[in-house]
Length: 201
Image (tube, rainbow, N blue to C red; front, top):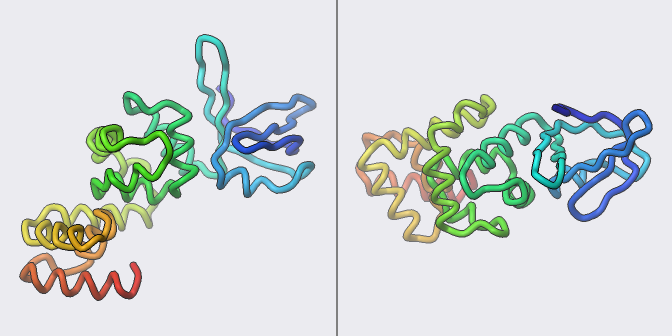
């Protein structure tokens, strides 16, 4: 298993980069974020990698951070989510936000990635919702915990539904409501969440 690459960037295109390691150029498929951060041709680069074995190819996927790689592996563990779709999701949505969207059951926002329809997004949420905490950073765990608290209370759930009907995403509404005292009446939760959302979460 090739776990990482450390070498010189000798080629880049829209979806991949070639890293020269010990005189050998190794092609990696990468996210848009990783591609943008690799620097110019000739610069040094370090990537965390994942080798995917197919019948007709050995493909390597490269990531700037261990967290991004872990989320890629998590996504591709879902039936119907191949490496290309996993890469497309992480090219469109920051990996920490992907964890938030899954934790808050915000399947609709996951469809922002090309190739991800609502049914596939719902399957990802269903299969991964209980797994996001195992790979999240401390900051993300705090957010996931906040979202979890919001979705475990009846009044909070009603407030979230009301905010979603006003046009906010499931994840935005869950995070805003989760920061409030869940014992408050629904109307107070909605008002408090609207104030939080107006300030920007």
